[in-house]
Image 1 (cartoon, rainbow, N blue to C red):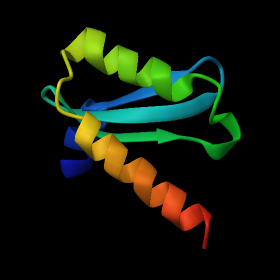
Image 2: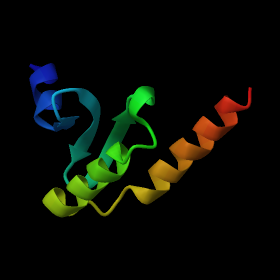
Image 3: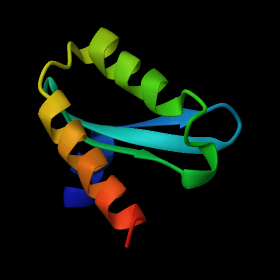
Image 4: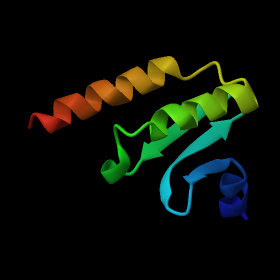
Length: 77
């Protein structure tokens, strides 16, 4: 039952190939994932734009900045 609840809030970038997804919690963008093969191709931008336009997402920049900072740190190790 809990999995069904989570799946209600997942939105997938799928143009014939699943390239990424977001998870929404009200107006908060809880998670964003873009397959590494498709990064730097506008997928993340499209997902964020979708979250903003469709859900009025307004609470995600701090979390995204923290995630990118973490990714940059991990790339250098």
